[in-house]
Length: 366
Image (tube, rainbow, N blue to C red):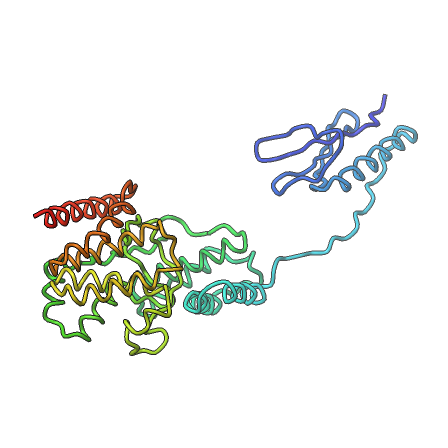
């Protein structure tokens, strides 16, 4: 008896499985496969991942099998309709579209870095489509960068940007582990607290404020790098964020005059007040701490730890001038807000606030 039935299966990376009774389109990586018999020979054909196409192929195949059982001869397969050949996404068009998206969603520097990378890559890559980009193209680009006299660190950065574009297009990065550009990380040396105190003590007023502004903000444009532990936060909580500064708005604008107009100046002011206090300039520290609190009022919640850090530095400035009665309410507020910290930096600041409160209370009782 001739075979008149076909059967559909779903094929994926791990094997085959039967489809549900009600067919549905399959995700990427899976496809329908049609099985049938011609005599004793088992045949198979992939029929795509869309349910309607798979169902149509099954119906057509079973109709052909029925005709064969009636005529007794296997008909020649009907010519399949020509498929539109899609060789992939145009190389130049895809790169321009990607750069356009980067320009809309990233900073100017991020866009510039990727633009430089892809411009150089396009000079050595002769692929007409992005799907045709290969390891050989990336190796040529690496050789071009090396020939340009760039440092290994810069070359690695350019390749990282290029890898990001591959991922954007859902393409596998073709490079091998042995292709990696090796470089040595720079050893960064930090000033000790004593060295910073000596530096600030030797600076005049303008130099002092400039140095403290640089220390507190990291002067990264357009993003500010904030040090871990600021206002008792951990490094992850501190992170980076868009910020404005006195220098953003005028180049030589005075930091203190600009304080009242922007809450983003809270952290530079905090470091400035702290530097004044730690170098014994308590009156100046008091003035900046007062402005620091004023900048935060209405912008920061009354129970925010940043308020606690601000009042702590204010209390230290007043205590340094032996004005313990005035320092007491600030120390009490700081002790309450900075208690029960989670991060190491927060715990240290909380302990500092508690110790300062105890010392001020002891001074008042005497």
